[in-house]
Amino acid sequence: MSDPTQAFDREAIHHHYDLSNEFYQLFLDPWMLYTCAYYRDPEDTLEQAQLDKLELVCRKLRLHAGERLLDIGCGWGSLAIWAAKHHGVRVLGVTLAEEQARFAHDWIRRAGLADHCRVECRDYRDLAALDPFDKVAAIGLIEHIGPGLAGGFFEGVHELLRPEGLFLNHGISRNHTWQRTPQWDFLIENVFPNAKLRHLSRLTEQMEQQRFEILDVENLRPHYARTCRHWAERLRLQETRAIALVGERTYRTWLLYLTASSISFEQSSLNLHQVLVQRVEPARVLVPTTREGTYASWPRRAARAQAAGA
Ligand SMILES: C[S@@+](CC[C@H](N)C(=O)[O-])C[C@H]1O[C@@H](n2cnc3c(N)ncnc32)[C@H](O)[C@@H]1O
Image (cartoon, rainbow, N blue to C red; front, side, top):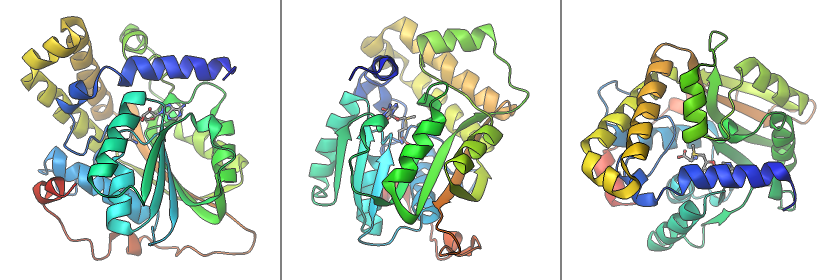
């Protein structure tokens, strides 16, 4: 691994995610989702909204049993497990965080899904030799992709997809009003050393330049304001345990980061866009052109029952 950007990213991810799984368990939901939840009802709990986010992602990707899904930046393995269990797909998840990969590996084994999904500790730049996938998800990865690297990332995803395959990119983007502040610099230095924000127009332009057709764009900004608020409230309730695990400075820095993020989403300087794109083959349209299938026959399931079944 001689690429200096890879070495920098590995160190940044280690700094952020290897704080310990126990620390993240203090404020994340039981499925360990660390991205924007989807509140079908504004009063929903974080647990419910995270399960609904997983299902929304699977529905947007139109997963069918037997398909192969690649989840790049898979966190602790939740989407891989949900998609294998509820949609019958075979999943490869990759993360750069070793603690996450270990956690996911154990979780997959305990869930009896080892024949259907696998999580590896790998950089997204080291995936080129894999057989093509039917679908690709990147949920919360684009924020970690450094300056000048997004085009290459989309090009790589294009190569990893079979013709007509779908790719869902879910990530934070900045509004044109967003401004760099000393608080942002503090958080970059202390929390997210490799964070990079882009405007949606730049991302979609780069996707098109890599021959993707943009099918659907949805902004979940208010959902992320609520998610971050829920995380901050949960962390504050765990103050004593958090300080014992990571020390007071890190605890207070994280409280600031989660609270400031919630406010940035509330005030709309930050957005959260899900962008669904297709690797197009000329003159063929295989995906239905309405959103109806995404939301049809979607019963509300109780989060508690789903957590128990994980
Ligand atoms: C914000 S977390 C999202 C995790 C998960 N998708 C979720 O929804 O909870 C970002 C993920 O991207 C992974 N990641 C960051 N940089 C990466 C890289 N260069 N290659 C592979 N994964 C990376 C991190 O390890 C982490 O798992």
